[in-house]
Length: 305
Image (cartoon, rainbow, N blue to C red; front, side):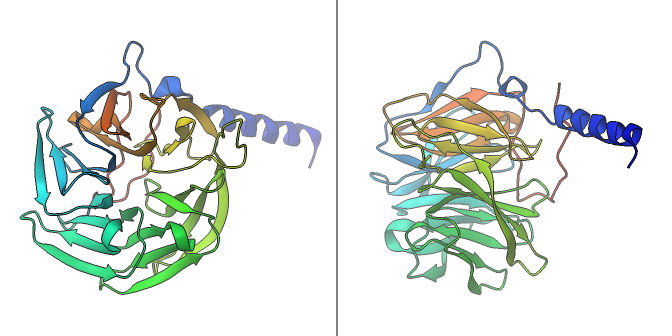
């Protein structure tokens, strides 16, 4: 390769890298901060949203239901007699899927509250459901990621790769599965093959860690926005990564004294970032919006400059 051609390639590469920079200034709005959206619980978790932007959540320690916070902020029991849930997500089929960690089950709820058990004798933590009906869930104690296919068959699709697999999300085109490590410092990604299996695992994102424990970030809940950015709750705060896996910044926890465990885009236009932080759920308005996996897979939208 001649020097002029090499220089052109290098300049093009640098230009592409510069164009992919996604700082927090593209997400956060000046003057907007965290505000309390829900309070009065013990340990909120399992944040999820529907097409209208209503927020669904659980109280893992003290709750006995799946709760719903509507667009006006009114909180009601959406599914009664459903304690110990750690992960929630709506599917394209109109059902709400849940990890019932306390009872070691994965279930689905219809809109009228009818429960159907999918699997039992498992150790589910969090889950994600693709538009075509593949459900993936993490098994933190056993270092596993499992899949339940649209016919209800469960298989182990990853074992021993992630130290403590916890939070889980998809790329916006739903071709990549991302899983946070509660016992390490990486967010791992896998390619989702046409048959639903996972391949090409990689420690794609390096989370910022506390000075006292530089190898463990305590990665937890995850979300994705319409520009393909990934968000993960950690001991250091809410960390944001661009689609290439580069750190874009860390948003401080609303309540530094409590664990930050779950994150979701919900509210009007799905433009509010919600986090479960102890017994309260906080939210803040953003310049972006969440990716909705019950919709058709989408390419990343161009981020504003």
